[in-house]
Amino acid sequence: MELSNPDAIVLCEPFHEGVYFILEKIAPNTPDALHGFPIWRGYFKIPKEILEKLARAHRKFRDELPLITDFTKVEEYLDILHGIDREVMFKATRSHFILPQMKVRYGCRILHLIRNPANTWMDFLHAYIKYNDSLFWRVTTSNHLWDQVKGSFYLGGMYEKVRKMYDLPEARDNLSRFIMTWVMCNYAGIKGSDFVIVYETVLKRRGLYFDLINRMLDKVVFHPDYAHLPNEKVALEMPERRAMLNTMMAQRIIEYGLKDFYKEILKVVKGTFNYWHMCDEYYPEI
Image 1 (cartoon, rainbow, N blue to C red):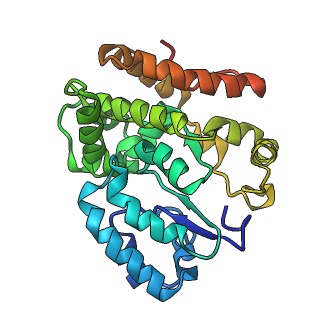
Image 2 (cartoon, one colour):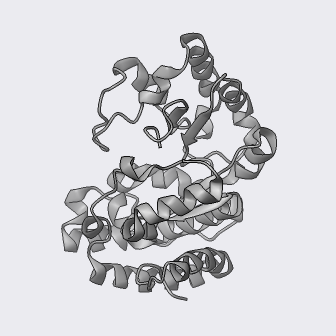
């Protein structure tokens, strides 16, 4: 997205707890350890005085993280971003529940990216858990929120916020915590967005899918020449394990009263798959 829009300020995770601490320690082109490329580079395009205002506003809502559920807590912060005299685009994985307010206040267009829950869960976990089959299933079905799980993409904090928001039952294991969070965040993301990008379709149709998105938005948001897409075999690996997880997740979706929310998600995903003549072998069936 950054390379496709060189005149815009493209920001990664402006709601990340430590974003402004990270910026103090790195150079603009420092590659991120997890992603392998400089995901924070866009912040260095922001004038210093505005960046300092953003950092001060960020401190005021840090206790709300890892998931923003009250728009008023981040309104000052987003107003500063909106006031920058350049187009600003950002990826924010903590903002599912405030998307409608963002659209109304700023007149922005919102894209939501969804990926199948089984492969997402596998990649939530550290590699030494993911690739150790017995340990993987032990962690998945354990009620103990190990530090390795709680810290993985902030599952512990996100689950607690989602559960309280929707008055959901206590989860009986880590997979339940995950699927409750995944369903409700994606449901909110789909309802609050202008266009839903289905990850599996990106991997299968690549440039053709990007061309469609750009036409729908009447803007080159993603130029196919700049797409750094993951290896399809790695991103969609372990189909047998995925099938087992999907069966378990389907049971939990019904058990925790998430069926109606999940059906809305599945309607969008299957609509995309049908358009591209793809079979759904990725998402739980209920």
